Amino acid sequence: MMIDMKKTENVGFFSRIRWGFGSILLVILLIIFSAIFIYIYHKYNSNLSLFVAILFLIVVIIIVFVKSSEIILPMNPTTTPIIGKTGIVIKKIEVGKPGVVKIDNQLWSAYSDTNIKENTEVIVTEVNGIYVKVKEKPKMISD
Image (tube, rainbow, N blue to C red; front, side, top):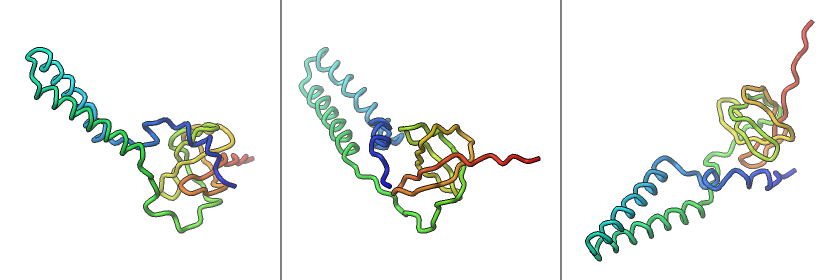
């Protein structure tokens, strides 16, 4: 069974393009400096300031375009079978919204047919590329 794309498309624009701290900082600084150069242009009528501001804004547009068109594939897909293994939910899983589980010291994006809270033990039922489908591990009742 393939993963339902509706479950993965709602992770949000910035999550989908995997913004790192450096990318965010660079874009914010470029926008701030553009605003400063536009202010200088209006105050002193400096064409060079306007040129630099426009150049910075073009760089921001290019960064956003490149980051949004990245195709992100796993570097080392697992070669060990993990179906049936247990893991712990690190980031809660909601129906239609993937979470994160830790299985054998590896973090996986995970989805489920039910909502599962953090720190809950789960069992892997399917592997779909970089996603695993999990279900909550039944609790053992001891006498």
